[in-house]
Length: 451
Image 1 (cartoon, helix red, strand yellow):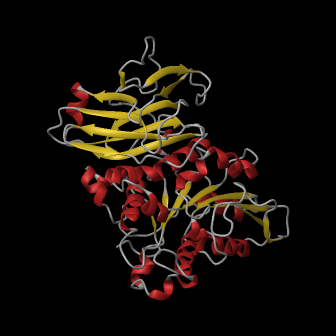
Image 2: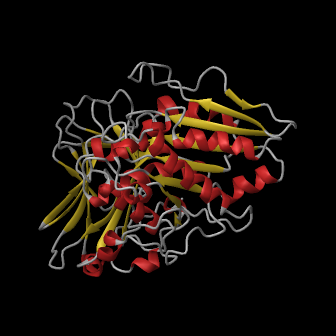
Image 3: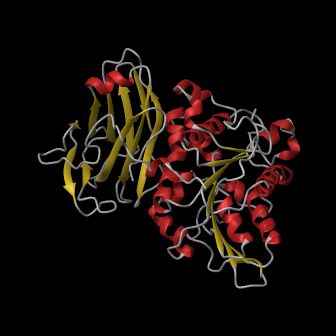
């Protein structure tokens, strides 16, 4: 069990083999608790110095109620820094038990406190019940979510997600589960590479162990990305033996349950050193790719009908596209087709395959799915004796997004290994293509983005 009232940061080196990464359940800091310098340090330093500061909070329904842990934490911070005018931009999409409102914040922010100086503490509370973390990457929400920042980076991004990953994510395997968090974290980090990020490990479920795998995914993500700070909202419920009065239902905490998570947040804040220098921010998506297992994942070598090392599966169509590109790339790959299995394949062969037998690989695909496309993208890693596959939808369209599988095992006897990128199985495809900008395959449990 993770010690109560700790932030957890993990060192990938401490995990060793992939099997140890999957099973990791104790802090790399030996249970000593919160390291003084962590993702909260920059925000705390700016507030303590009387400077304006911004928190971007991306949350599911456990951050929706007024008495939720995250909203109580915001209001507590306002009392700790009374000189600041504290504003909460509150996402307005959830209306009467359904996401029928505007995909935007309310017209005006909630004024939590007026303050006594010109300094402002602004909280962007992008809370959407029933949501997967990737939902806010969707093009219908992304620009609106970031608009109050006025092109400035936030001082902290805090994620409060996980319950819907267990409830909605299929298949519920570890590589894709880890990737379901790494993908949106990586996309945000590409937008704000110098902003630290933190996440809350949410409460266990009352009646079963449904959240256990999600907790394990978060722990693995922190092992992959040591700069990520984790707040343990999970262990206090176990210490209280998941008492019935701590829950509204099997998943959602009651006011008493939210109090436990709120205490974790405030204790963590009080344990944080106020500091702007040397705060870890490195994210997998921004790390260089030194030794990809397959070359030309960035499509740069493309002088024939297909990019070098890529091949078509079934009846897929491929063309260069110069309209849908990411950050100055000369082109992307437009993938079309008329059947659900139409796609692309790229293989790990020769010395690269020999290097990873009995180990793991991680896969990251940067792609764009127009809203008009009937299907999303599905990624599959196949060996002669195993398959790892993503779900058919990653809940984000009309924006560049990552699809990630982290730590896919390669059998020791593997004689073949390849990655397939397909139009998914959700609907019969139309003729609207999807776009691939980059595929990165690396050895080990930690993906790389190369940006």
